[in-house]
Image (cartoon, rainbow, N blue to C red; front, side):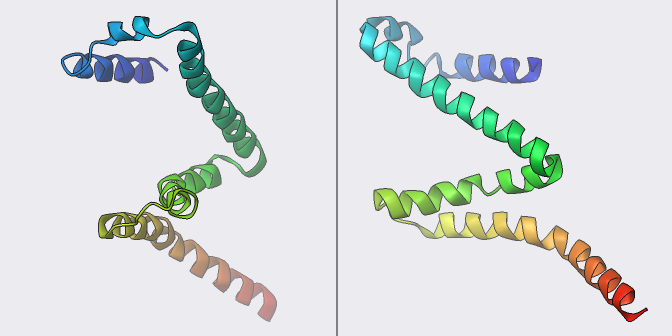
Length: 121
């Protein structure tokens, strides 16, 4: 928790020379409400789903599926927003998927051998 706060503060300090955060006070009430609701509501929903997933399938599977988020973002931006997918995005998606599949191949092979041994007895 403290590490996340420290990261947020350091990121905010890094952006100070680029943009003055005091300009946020120039927004009217409706704009501030929209900013807060866009920041808080999706975050709260995401955390609710995250904790439900951890309770349902466990933290290991939840962390594996959470690595698909960038892949899902690129695919949905292509399908919904008609965004172009460039080579670097395809390369990144390939690396993410390979990073999930390759370490789990050993587990799949062990599981198949266990099933074959149990079925042969």
